[in-house]
Image (cartoon, rainbow, N blue to C red):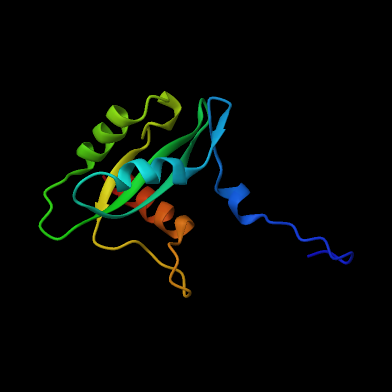
Length: 122
């Protein structure tokens, strides 16, 4: 809030992804992945690429007993989302839990950092 009493919402804008000059929000892909049988939780974020912008990537927590794998998630999005710019060009990983902030919300930045670290190690 500024000195004049105007409130500026900034959090969601920083979550916005831009792929090949097309802007969209990660929750649009999260909604698709959440429809996938066997998915308990999901977090989508952008992995920067200098040629195309943000490549969407996902960290997925699977339900107990589920056999889904990362490639299944990528394929599901491709099959259920006609907008190519919303496909998981950055890939996906299966995790035990998503990283949460102290207030219990998914920490998108920390989850992204974990994804990058895991991919750098492989």
